[in-house]
Length: 227
Image (spheres, rainbow, N blue to C red):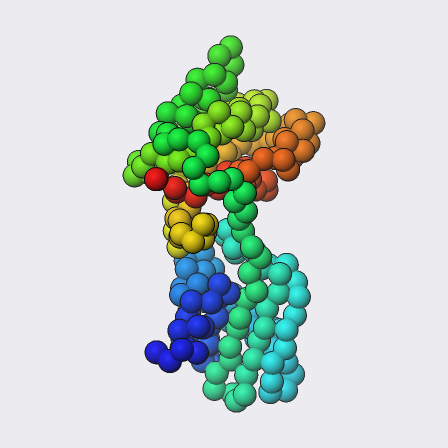
């Protein structure tokens, strides 16, 4: 590959070139990860819908979401009728403010089980777990994590069941202190959130180092720092 081709290949933003009938002709590394949660058809339709009326390039700013990918805009370009390019402009996903050596190596499964046991006392909630069993011990501030997870469970306790999932974020990583770290997530899923408690949780997470996403579920995203 030329330097320009390598630059495009490792761009943080997904880039895809389609044929006129919607076949993928090329896709950079980030786009290949994106295709794991977005269909070729919907991405091609997106390119076709936001293309310039005449040949050329057009950038449009809008909010898009595919799985855990979020974008604030896209650029579509074509110079002939045979192929069309789509570049999606990705929102930064993670912040890591804490020093690498903060905390100590801890078993994340044990920390979650401790929180579940604490919140199960005098409760009729059915706590369910779906865990990827391959995550090693990680460097984490265990006390801060336990406090956060307990606050999240407190938001969910008015439901009959709470499902906690632990999984790798395939193809996603962060660079921190000149190193590259894989990511995993803890997802807490339930039917309804207590709105008053949720407001308190949102205020709380604004001042902590963990990156938390609150949508239909609540996600804690953590870098896999093991030394």
